Length: 529
Image (cartoon, rainbow, N blue to C red; front, side, top):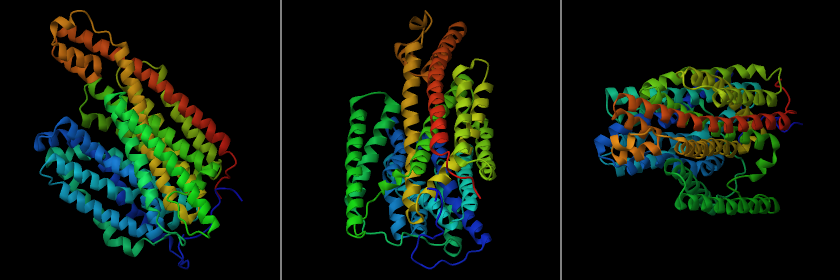
């Protein structure tokens, strides 16, 4: 039997009860509300930061923590919450997380100070860690039949992509017409349908033999993710320094200790009849389908976030678009992500899933190739076309790889599998921003050649800022007379584009490599029946 074949099981000790297909799809529609909530929340708050800074008199450091508190706590608890859902019930954890997320959002919307807002964002990360693994693992158990599950996963991914696309537009509109707190307060009406109808439509599922909770493993998982994520974000924001490198090193050391403990608990549980309970079943990574699909996801998100990082700067700083305008410019590509994810569902009935994943990754590599070897100086058309091709590939590959992750894991471990997948998303996104962002910044700084006369025409601080970032160069150009301003802008564009070519070439190599890996390792996964 294939590694991806499924045992039709609810993952619970209760006897199986037949479910009507219509009821299953209604349950899925309710699960889309927390998915949309998390996706919108991830991107909408960015557009509220200027208003928050003015309203709460927040410093630059506080603004960074307002953004960072949420992903730090979220990443640190994803694995623990996925395992907890397997134990206490995934639906129960989803309702706890949804209620807590809505309540904390409502309170945080009226935060009287930046410190209260940072604490509220940390609370949202705590409850947010309960949502995404719960939704994906519940889908695994509501749809045990592979073809229906694959479509459900595609809809789940479409909801996440759609929410990410709506976030910048929705957040900008709310801040413009109401106040910054509306971005958080909107969580309440979004989550109410789930809480009202979910108990009647969403079935409960859990691991029938969960074992005891291992508190040291939870502590170790936090000591792995929080320092590592903090270090990565600090590198992305401030460049290389001893403190973030030490934080990453400490996280890696704790990661080694965490894996050793999980292996010991797994061996002990097997020897003593399952009394020990590892927080993370590391044996899942022994399944080549599971581990390869996770790797493909991490590399895809790594490259994708690097692309969005430089595209947003290009559109806003070099093309003169506002944040809302740049968000709208990206919407067609994000719609393509949704469409590709849905269209590949019937495709895997005739083409092996591994080749579909490989083809999607190869399509993404093509998008990066356009950027790596193309000319960006004639407007944003080339970059937006590359984004469209990239998103088509990501939508196709991510949908099938997520389905392979769920299908390769036993039903009773679906919460842990979903949590690993979500953690991979977070890690890939952060690494892409940090590593590719650092390379982009270093290339810009190394290649910038400001024209003669700038040092005499502008304050030294402004010139120093121009040498550090593209935004600094644009601000400097706005304060200079016409010809000199044009020369500064041209020099900054050339230096920035040099970094874009380098980062796109790296992403091209990564996507091509991931495509080959998927084609080789996943080639024996059978077509859907």
